[in-house]
Length: 230
Image 1 (tube, rainbow, N blue to C red):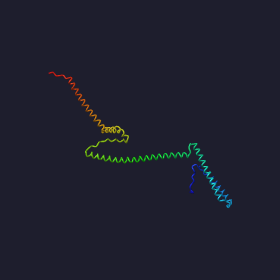
Image 2: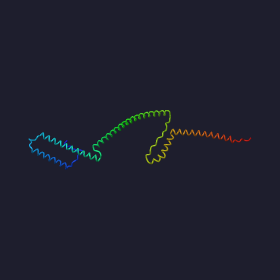
Image 3: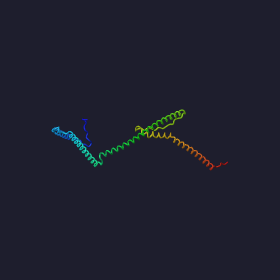
């Protein structure tokens, strides 16, 4: 504890080395003067109790003066801060503490929401794993059934991967993408149904036109029929 350096207070000005030397010299002179006064007086006439009371009173007065001086400096600083910034240091620290409490409560609320979302995500992940296992079981069962029945699996169309180099971009845009959409349209169930409907309509239209032309041909033959002379 003897080697610990004293730390100045927040509002206390730091003295320079010359000022410290002057104050130290003043204290040394005061101690020497007090020592000479005490040494010049006879020790038999000293009232110890009165001396203790005087020392305690002097120490109390010095402490009170020090505290009063610092309080006045603090009040003067608060006044200057109020005039300059519109708020004192204590008021600013109080406002900062209130804002910190608000931010802390919001962070706690956000943390609770994140924990709930995290628990929900784990629950959904477990459900996804269970459903994925069920889908795999169903897929394997259907594959075995198709294999036993000799049913050909449906041909799927996979989406082409993006080009990795600049040289692959023209072929990707001019060949890969059109061929992908042609295959997707060709293997689409709705497109096949639409094509079937068109073929049925064309077939019905061709039959209708054939019957209409046959009727008109028969009518024209009847209208312009010229009997042959015997």
